[in-house]
Image (spheres, chains in turn brown, blue):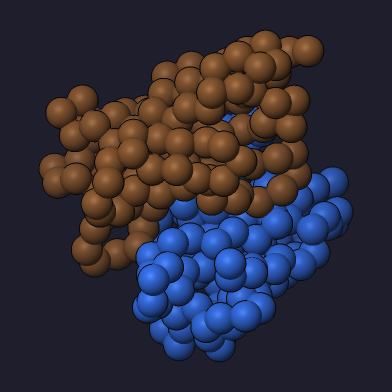
Length: 114
Length: 118
């Protein structure tokens, strides 16, 4: 069975500092991996995804993530945090073939301090 | 990107009544839609997978008679919370996936619907 673990339910960074949100997955075969962002009372918006190819994936708003198979990780980073990055971030996995069923992590709330 | 719209965004109802939430894919055909429930400060819990023209597949622990899902067309799925009770109050989010193409498999989310049962 697949699962997703996001370390740290809350992360605080200063504006301009590095953002690092951690995601580890468990899967019998490498899955597709996603990061979504959720602003208050809204649905989820895709930040980036890894399916195949280059393991360093760039997304919107300056975010990127690296798929590390050996570490079963897909951590999200951004070199310089902006106040507008404050939101809830979810890591998700999906099997490569078959069902489009997604498994979401418990989320990490990012707070950006002025 | 593909757009998914949910309506209503907020609904308040009395205990014992039924509430319907609509999820529409505006610019693409979605053969599969998913309904999630999100508790405060919690992750998304998949409730059911809805395929056009067939019965929804419910996740373990989700009452199918309580949460009725209908996917009558390729652009519309509805979730009806029947005989709602305060414990059904939650944020419900639908999502849809493109069946083919470069974005195949990517989930597109609606804006969510906050249900409050008094």
